[in-house]
Length: 334
Image (cartoon, rainbow, N blue to C red; front, top):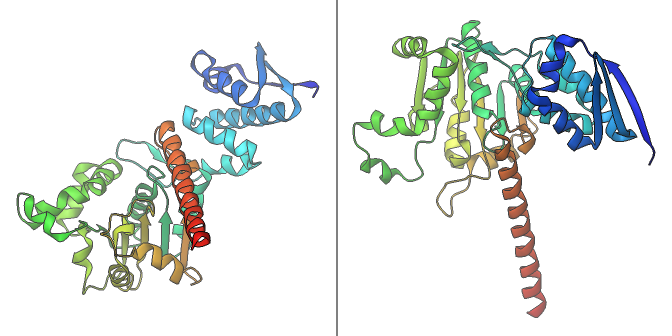
């Protein structure tokens, strides 16, 4: 194919954030799009095959728009923009950064970072119950807790309740030191960590003492009706169908619930079925219940985590395929 050239002007003040330290962003775009990018003063020229030039041009425009708004350009969001450009969803991707959920205790604005995360937060605003399913690092729990804290601060709910199945097998608790609360606290540590980061340790403790924030194992939910509360059930893949039904039927007037889990990390003992998996099949067509499956594209941890998840998905798919082929062979021999 013949090469084309496309140019645009970029304000001098935006050169460093858009190009990155030592032009690292430009080098990434050049490698991914198969183009050459050259700047002379405020003029930026892109040379290469038409499709690559088109993608690179759109990505640079989006990065410039992001920089004008004072948003940091990182290796991570550059990757998201490149992926979005390849899928013709750059315009949607730009809107992701308009969605401010809250400001963390250290003054950092908390926003979705991917299209999947934006859809997830929109679902939480519109529905009474939301199932957020996806691999590690997609922000399922963190965003749910940010939305809960925002609702609490806006007086939309009177309290926040965070829960998760504490253990895979009850007898394991006996080997841990301390009383029951001290025994289950290690299982709830990720929830405490997120609360501290978003609210600040002092605010968190103050609300905990007043009973306005409750962090408890799922077993504590039995027999309660939870009105005017924002409830987050984490690690829901490790609930049994009975536990999931029990939890869902606790929800009272003025409450919202977000159920998060990763169906690839079920720790239940052999023979037990995941309540999360069953619930997504039973409840998928009920109005007021939203469901979303986040993917490796929504991972907001180190870029290597995305590759690890993708490698595991490929491995699991191959294992399933080999298993089916083995069954077919055995059936033919029989």
